[in-house]
Image 1 (tube, rainbow, N blue to C red):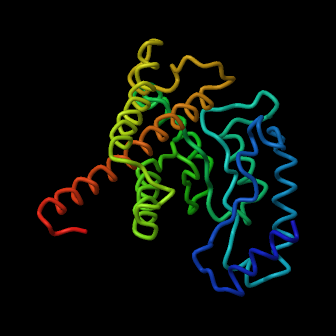
Image 2: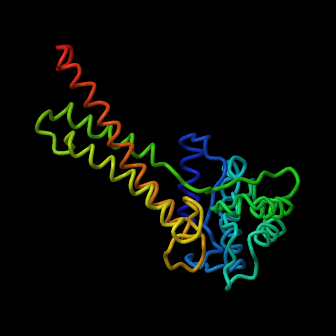
Image 3: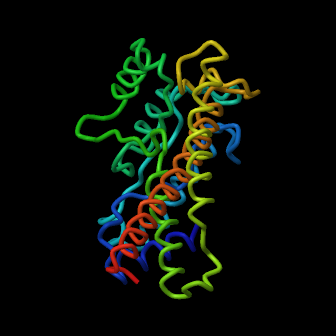
Length: 255
């Protein structure tokens, strides 16, 4: 705890990183995958200890507040006394002065959104947030496949520019075409699996895998499609660049 606060103070006050305005002390403390295993009192004591450590640095405490409780919507750990709204309500009651912004994680399925159940859950949670405070999504159906694919393709291009024909991190035109199709297939197959199991296309709740909670299926489905998107985007960019270079070679305008 002391080391975390010391380093946070170093970043914010010593180095002047004014982009850091809130700090999450624990990821998804309500989950059965977390070391807290849904124990609200344990998490609260950790938050209070962290705040007490921050008091050693008045300037840090003035600049940075807690983001909490960082729990998962549409999930209730059997070992926990509270659901998502309950966690928000209790944290507002016990740590209202220390929490600068309230955050939750959301991975809604298509049916949950279209039926209005998701909006109703969100309204219930928002009602527990004190007036004047904001509620944000710390996680909301993560993506990043396009960015990852673009960055990986840039890595290949840089390898080619630096190493030329001897580049070890390289992909041939033939292989990139095949892999672009593989990435597209992974994306589409994830949607088809949900449909074959009775759901809509890309409705992760219907993926035919064993999971204790639909959130786990959502995370798995998102992982599959983002892998597919990453591969497809990376290979498509390389295909486009290779085509441009080939056209330039034919016209004598590229080396």
